[in-house]
Structures are given as structure tokens and as C-alpha cells.
Length: 217
Image 1 (cartoon, one colour):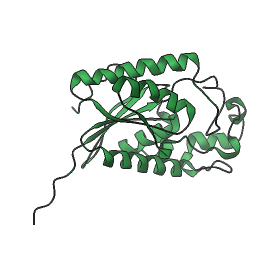
Image 2 (cartoon, one colour):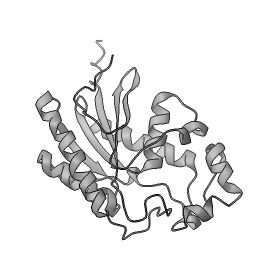
Image 3 (cartoon, helix red, strand yellow):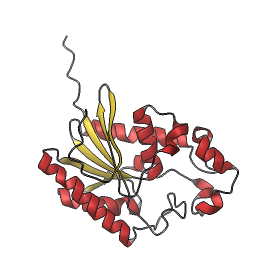
Image 4 (cartoon, one colour):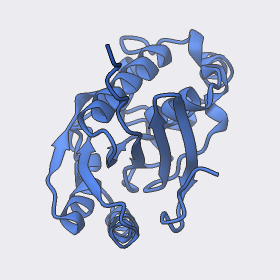
């Protein structure tokens, strides 16, 4: 009996949300009510234009997903509008659950003895009352797999947060989670991963340039 054909590759464009009033200052986590700053809205419009340019490259986007938080949905909105799509919420794209650390200033957290573990051995750390980095990476990987399965052979946008995107990139590159802090994911940057049946191919990380050149070498 003939084996059914393998599904075609799916290109996932992982977009970090735009800048907020607390970016680089506070660990906001999943606390509600945090919106984009004026600069973040400008960043969202720019990344929307960059992604919309893919239509001219015969690589139009089939769907736009976002984590349920305000800052990701506000980033996804202009992208979806430029593409004539609607934003679909996906809880798997949520920020890490920082538990008791939610809302704390980064300066204060950096003085805690646990901070060294967060930076050097994140796979062994669980946020008090929250999620572990390993659980976050597993959740993010499952979310991408479900999105990929829903859109075989297409390009999909997934708007998420810095740490989940870093974890997804590390996983795609076969990098140990303890090294994922070496990856930089800037506001409204795009990290492009082509998910094939032979494994993921990382085409771009933290990109702020032209996306039309995203092809495997």
C-alpha cells in the first residue's frame, strides 16, 4: 500500500510584540492591561508592511496568530489588516508564567541569587508560583506544531514574546535550553523557521530587514 504523501513545509514567522512602556524595565509576564507604547505601535506598522511585502514574492501569509495578551494582539492587528486576515488567539504563544516575579523590576531581580540560575542554567529553574523554562519551551513547541499542522505548505505569522520565541529558536537549532539566553529577540523582530518533515530550518533570527530573501541555501 502506498504511503500517503508527506505534508509540505510550513514557514512560521515568529514576531515579538512591539515596545511597551515597561520594556527593559519590568517583568510584566501575563498581567493584563499592558498596551503598546507609541513606539511599539510604529514598530507594529513597520513589521506589518514588511510581512505584507511577501505577497509580491508569491509567499502570502495564510493566517495570523497571537498570544491572548493585549500587547501581542495590538502588534498582530496591523499585520492582519495589511493581509486581509483576522487575528486568531492561541494560548500556547503566551509569555512565560513568571508567578511571584510578575511585575517586578528587572534591576531588583538581577540582584537576587536565583538570577544567575535564570541566566546560566535556565533549564533547572522554575519561577516561584509559576512555570519552568522547560515547560514554556514544550508549550511553545506544541503551539507551533499545531499551527503548522493547520497550515501545511503555507506561511503563518505567530506573534508572541521574547522568551518563548528564544526557546522556539533554540529548539529548532538543536541548542540546549541552557544556551537560549544567548539569543536576542528585539521588539517587532521576525524569526523565520521553515518546518519540514526532515526537521526545522532556521532562516532568520531577530530580523528587522527584508523578508523576501528568506529561502534555504
